[in-house]
Image 1 (cartoon, one colour):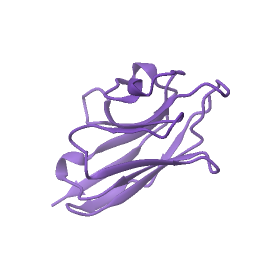
Image 2: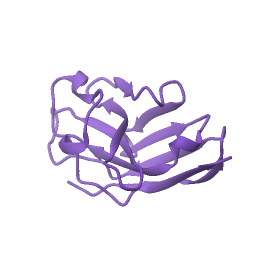
Image 3: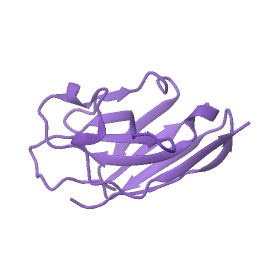
Image 4: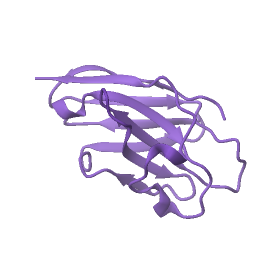
Amino acid sequence: AQVPVESGGGSVEAGGSLRLSCAGLRSTYSLPNNHCMGWFRQYPGTAREWVASIYTGGGNTYYADSVKGRFTISRDNAKNTLYLQMNTLKNEDTAMYYCAVSRPTPNPNRCNGVDDSAFGPWGQGTQVTVFS
């Protein structure tokens, strides 16, 4: 699978917004297999944690409780790009953000509350820093 390239990170004041992009996110598995495409984040010295997912089969979206109502995941199939719109940013959103695609799954609920072991490959990530 192609290694994704994340972009759009930066430094923003608390309460502000950023939109992350993920280019080249695709699986080696062809249709009709469906997958989860997800955003994860990682704080220094900790494991990656799941932020949001979208299921390619029907567009179902899932969010971690910590970002629900503030972040929106979406994808542009024509551009093969995944997005994460982040609004009302908080200091605790400061992290490195990564995108990845999962192994094929027929069950969209597999996209909810996932760990990163079923996803990959991983890119370099994009840093988001929220300051007060």
